[in-house]
Length: 400
Ligand code: HEM
Image (cartoon, rainbow, N blue to C red; front, side, top):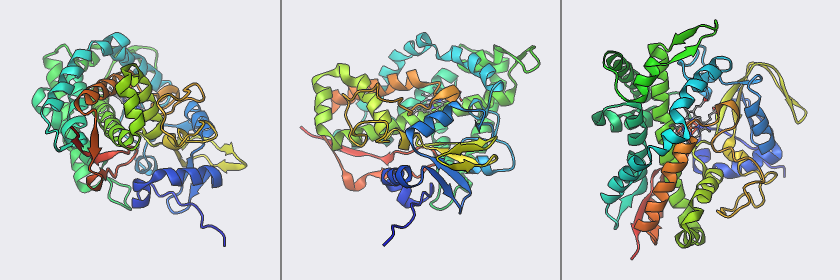
């Protein structure tokens, strides 16, 4: 009997619940996967995904990074993540200045305080790692850096959560999600206006004051839409992802208690553990690109004008690239292949250093707080979101 063809439906329950078996089959059976139902392609092998991420002249970001955006007739909102060079290069060189190692290091104390604050408030008998801890703290860090007043910082997280939600079988925004996007854009737009009048020591005010070299070679300032777009992106990119990475870490370590023991015995392994988590179950499973010209791989042609899923999470588990790719091993040899968890090429994560620091501090404090713990497996719940994967609820009990 022939095996049924592998099906990758990015909005199905089956995929949300267990993507990794699907990835393995795609790598073996359909390295250039094509979905007839939704008219998109997907690459899953490490070599192919890394090469495509580097080749922005073929695989463009300018139509957006998720399927509904890329397939939509209207272009996406203006945002660094949806730009190709030369526009991307100009904006990236500007915002890079806000993310220098020194700028990130200066946030360390804030991160520690926020981590301690949220962890200090939980009940060790029963708490939800995501809702009580890894959800609230990263959004506080990034919105504070951006200049969002305290009373609106958690609201930003709820808008993002709502906007990323997808109903099974439906790739578009939910009605609530659409409204959340509008509310969030209106909010940031208002804040930009306010900062124009009354600049503060924050990222928004610095972006308002900064100049970039425009396409005509002349210096120009960023307009309201560009600044609003960047601020909204930071909220999403800088909060949801760290939330998911910390939540998934707690689940993964519970399934691999020997690895948690290794960390308890030697905290200097924390940075390596963060890298391994990003590889093994990182939060960004894919970003979608749009082909500007034909691409030829494995004897197949992906025609120009098509959406292509670049599956970073699949590539990071590709047995062709990593030894024992499906084993979580914080001591693994990281020089074997590029970890694609933060992307690769010109769009690679701007906030990687901040994300690494936040996750490392969170893990360090969790090791103190719950050297022994158990996950309440029956209450574990995954998110159903576009691009990002992870948990909505990770209930744990600290063991004495
Ligand atoms: C564990 C946490 C994080 C992960 C896994 C992650 C992952 C990624 C990935 C995969 C991309 C590339 C997207 C693409 O190729 O289309 C990206 C881009 C980006 N990330 Fe992150 N990210 C994280 C945290 C953060 C944080 C904390 C910030 C902000 C402070 C941030 C800001 C950005 C921005 C602005 C971009 C767009 C860069 C560009 O287009 O040039 N990210 N991130």
